[in-house]
Length: 122
Image 1 (cartoon, helix red, strand yellow):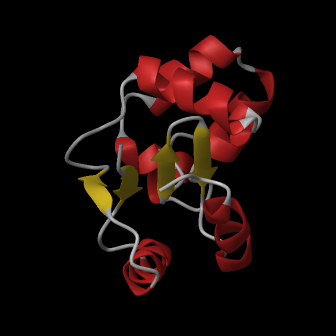
Image 2 (spheres, helix red, strand yellow):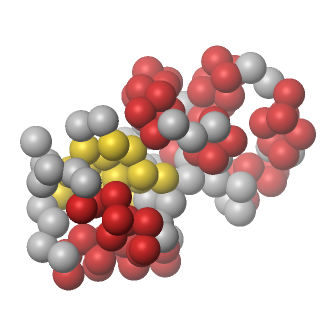
Image 3 (cartoon, rainbow, N blue to C red):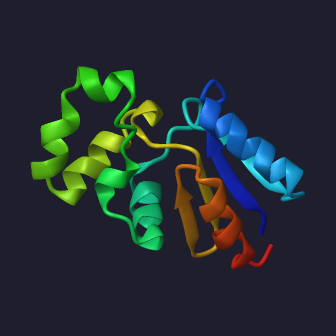
């Protein structure tokens, strides 16, 4: 199974992550988040596999996040409610996301990816 790379092409962090994957000869399936929005069930699966709290899946610097005033809602809403919100628009979801089997990496930090990708059997 290939690695799935979920990105927004205009995002500079996504471009850096994609270049890192290419420079490290990692074969991946490219998924553009605003063209193929993650479904609630996918987000729940990724959340469980990542081990992260749900607030880490929100693109807190995004225009839509700010327009919808989600800062306080993220602190008080249930996980189910937040997954529903995330599934409405891919621009609410933090990216890039790298998925392989039971590993889900959210956001791009090169040193973290270097460490975690070593542990993924590619």
